[in-house]
Image (cartoon, rainbow, N blue to C red; front, side, top):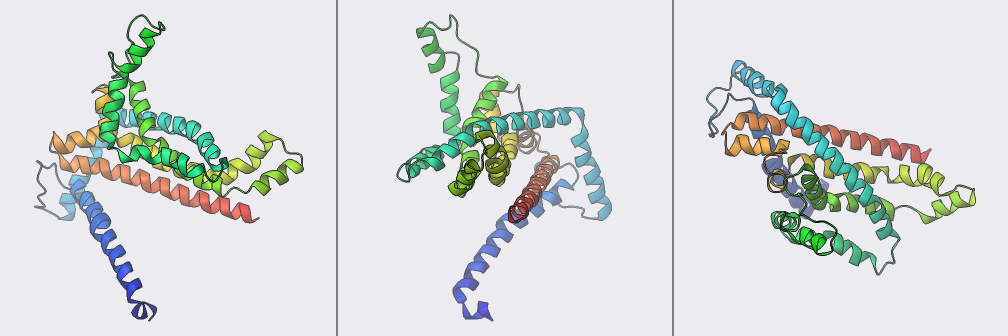
Amino acid sequence: MSLVRNPFKTATLTIIWGWLILLVLAPTLLVVLVSLMPESTGQMIFSDLSPAALWQGFLSNYGQLISPVYVGVFGHSLWIGLVTTIICLVLGYPFAWMISRASPRLQPLLLLLVIIPFWTNSLIRIYALRTLIATRGLLNDVLMSLGLIDAPLRLLYTEEAVIAGLVYMLLPFMILPLYAVFEQLSRATLEAARDLGANGVASFRHIVLPLTMPGIIAGVLLVFLPAMGMFYVSDLLGGSRHPLIGNIIKGQFLEANNWSFGSAISVMLTMIMAFLLLAYYRSVKLFKREATL
């Protein structure tokens, strides 16, 4: 009855549900269906949707995921994603804390500086970073002019360059959720801990860290999985020597024309994201329950 009496609310919910069904649910189900089809040739042809044919497609496409080649790429992607996430957390945690403790007039400016890189296309930013760290780039020119090195350093097409590019791209996604939880952190709670004799380390371990854990987990979710799939960062800064799982998906769709296997890898990444979101939901629920005790 309330929806009938409020046409604006009804129209808003209709648009939201229509958006989710058409642009999220339907494409996801289509990717899952394609992942169960036999090896395709770059065309979406559903010739046989019988259970036996889908089962054979499942065994064929998902069975390739345990191939040593793809297991190696997946393990390397996990390593790159883990290192990138740790660096973003180490850099982003104190940065978010400093923003939250800045004066109210300065905070909007600092947040603006964090999100300003989003105003420029990410591909252009990676090309700019590539120019800086190239053998004849600005960084090597400055170091040689200062006499710190005798010959140009080889920075481009290395694993370190890929990690640096990913940190450069994803650091704001770690800072913003951490800033949100630091903003909710009561100064009175920290002052009470100090009055009760807790030093800085004890306050951080028993108060600050638990209360900011939801922001840490949210930042990890926003950084870890995208770091495994940004194929253009690996292509431009790592060459073909350090492929990520995103490079494999791109190769299957654009070069090998094996959409079924590319969809199977995409479904696997979606399942990992679902698992991480479930872990985030349960951890937030646990922290809220402990906070009320």
